[in-house]
Length: 374
Ligand code: GLU
Image 1 (cartoon, rainbow, N blue to C red):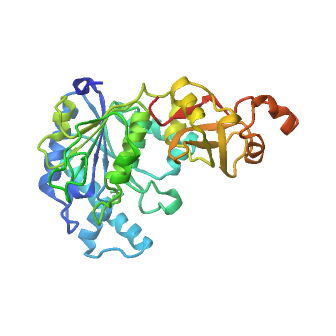
Image 2 (image 1 turned 30 degrees about the horizontal axis):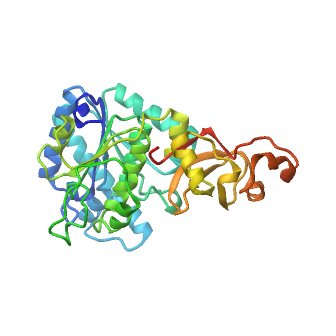
Image 3 (image 1 turned 180 degrees about the vertical axis):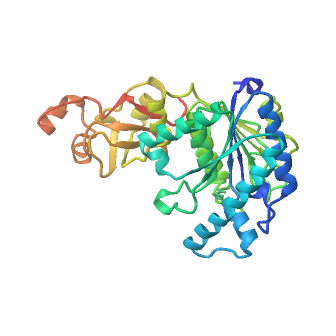
């Protein structure tokens, strides 16, 4: 895939981080926000559909209250103050260009529950049909740990998949992925295109973001893995770059482009890859990894070396390689206890081991979504 095709992308998701729209004090950076809104409004005028995923609630709340949260309830309270301010500012700026916006606040369970996954999607589609620009954030005020996305990078990738976007642009305080940390190494080089996210890249990127946002390069790579697996191109670029969104959407080589692995998945598979929360995980040997990723095969008990977690028939499980990296997710045909009895054994032995054999496969290909390139 070439960046030129971005010119034809109809539906764009743009993610802006806290540091892109607020000062380090948390006060809103009006100059940057105004420029961005103008640019997005212009793109919208040119016929593109836009979804903005905006952080900044906690930052703006800190700016207003003049206090930094030290506990979860304080952070949630501050987000409640800041989210209103953020939307007030977006409303004011977008209405100058006669644009209608909508606030969409999501928690993790909007995606993990398949019915709610479809529901969020339909709401976004309806908003886009009305010509509205949805502005999405995590519902920080109610999102306790188990309901959290954790960061807006992941959230933006989930929204891009859920809304069947043609392109995700993540604007940040860094202009892309480097071959080493540019803050520590002056000779670090920007990587312009990535077709596979390696474990080494992930290990290099595990540093924290700013004090007000949750992300960093690691969460951006998690987001990129998700979009790549779901057929959506993603670009990370600097929010300091003038007109970055318009230029990227025009095919210009800015930032780092993460090339998708395949065509986008149909909604059921997409939910598996994006929204589902696995109840357990199956570790597979090298032969099974090869069969899944490169030969389009189902997962048979013989290729499984370990089963973790408590799961029932029909639950979603992660399928992992020997290094622990998640390769795929799928719906499992046997319970965890049954799986532990039949793993490492040939399918012809299932009936003897369990008393009957309903399925030869542990996870059928049709009920599986790959997260790695094939
Ligand atoms: N949802 C948080 C906020 O609006 C930001 C999370 C993040 O930046 O990743 O402040």
